[in-house]
Length: 138
Image 1 (cartoon, rainbow, N blue to C red):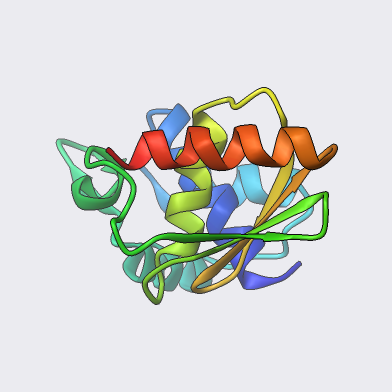
Image 2 (cartoon, rainbow, N blue to C red):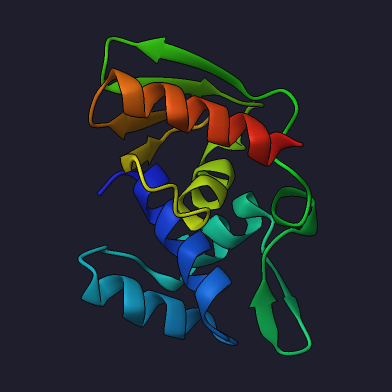
């Protein structure tokens, strides 16, 4: 699976569970179908800014406790897609934040390095989702 999907999975794991060892992350990811090594997990944690604090891995404070990045731009693409552009390296973290907001009209998100594709059912849902994400920025 692509690196950005692995990064998204790691961000979700660390945000939802108390994990204290890299082998725990690797084991969970293997069960989800990711072929990872301890070395790749170590690099991923470094790239994502995840640090070990008080014996467990924690998310970077900047991207999760703060509102969505002010540099986030949203563009409608057709009736079923929203393209979100962010600062380099922030798309996965922002996608996790958007997913955790549990916005009813979002069908799914896919994040790259600086771009997030947000799938919605129709044009009405697209407008509602854009409005809700803009509210999250504040």
